[in-house]
Amino acid sequence: MAGDPAERAELVHLLAARRATAALDRAHPHITFSLLHWVLDTWADEPAREVFRQGAALLADRYRELGLNQLLPIDRVWVGVRSTRPDAFGGFHHPNQGYRHVQLASVVTRYGRLSDPRPAPPELVALDLLRSYAHDCLHWGSFREYRLRNGQVVRSRYGINRRDAHGRTYSARDEDGAVSTRNLGVVMEGATDREARAIAAAVADRLGLAGRIAPPDRIAFRDTTGRLEPSDVDHAEPGGATRFHLAMAAYEHGVGARYQRFLTETGGADTAALHGLVVAAMIGGDLSGLTGWLDRRLGPRAFPRIFRSPAYTGPDPGD
Image (cartoon, rainbow, N blue to C red; front, side):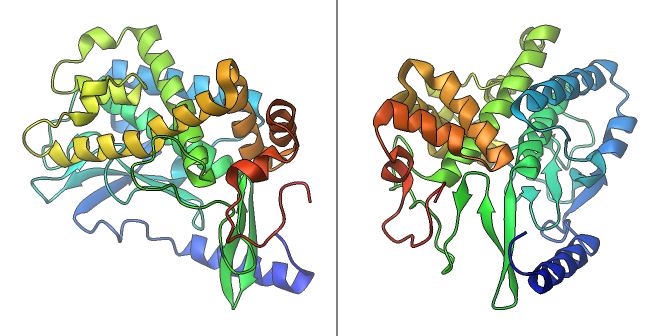
């Protein structure tokens, strides 16, 4: 946390109060939530339990390599398991869910029709939940800095992104229809989900899940493992899953595909190295490795030339 001791003390007090009174289910009054560790304990399907068990071990090892030595506590993950709405369809792309940085907690939903007590294929439910958890572990573990502004708590730095004294972000929004990105929020979200999908794919391959998933869930399986085909993002199954597939397609166009294009345009044959530097900088908050790599490849001050918005008035990384 930034600021003088008095400001830091007030920040600690305000953040602690918000985290102690978190009621993360209020945005979804029609959904019944349970904590992740309770959900895992109630799974009767052993193959599904094995999906999450092996995935959690993989993500712990992978994130430790990247500099993240602790994972989001599973008692800080709320899982939506049932809904009174007949058309409610849960999973990674359910609206208004994900990590809540002020509360240090995550809100997710199980994949499938939430009004149907019969779950979708249990191993796919587990794989989708693993992706959500791996995704939010990186959000939870990313560097962050808070300040007080007009009595309000403001996150002034997050990962490789930052805001100036007026609240303006370092990079501008991408234009509508953009096929690549120069927005740090999209870069961080894309990098986060690339890691989560890679972990899901590794577990799926190790356990041979691809052959056990039948239509119409194969599109969700390919999405969860990062193996969507071009036709998938233009396809929507009939019924309640339609909005889920539309949200999946929008996310892929707006985040996944744009981040991949950014890596290719900027990193060339070294996309894996660039991606690793992005994630390591997100976790540690030290951008010197990333900015140095970009400078050597693209010339001096490559990071601000690529990302800085004309409206931003604060310092550049390293200043």
